[in-house]
Image (cartoon, rainbow, N blue to C red; front, side, top):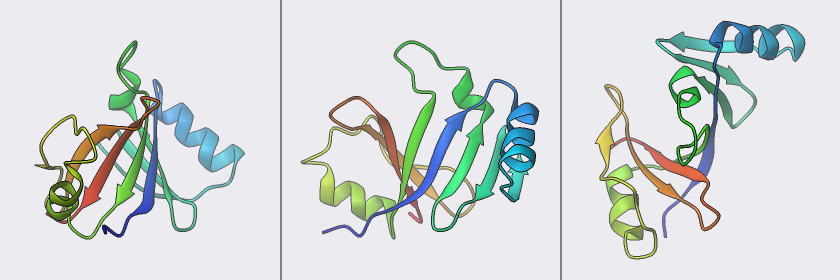
Length: 116
């Protein structure tokens, strides 16, 4: 079995600066990082991520994503590919982490994220 934990909840934002102000000033979350079209807020074991890229999607494309942290994306993919209809192959996301995407039975956009 694959050890899975909810690592990120990612929400699309059409105005990242406005969303950052809302989550930091109105709600009081501490922003832990920002780069390109992403901002990250620590909320305990799960990180809230805001994404300007997801906001551009509409219709059949997601504006939210549940990101599950795994010890190895390649191993999770190999172990679960017979039970999950993955949207894509595992791919590098940044210098140290990979991701692979899928939808749950209700169509919610999800991914596994972590080291290769």
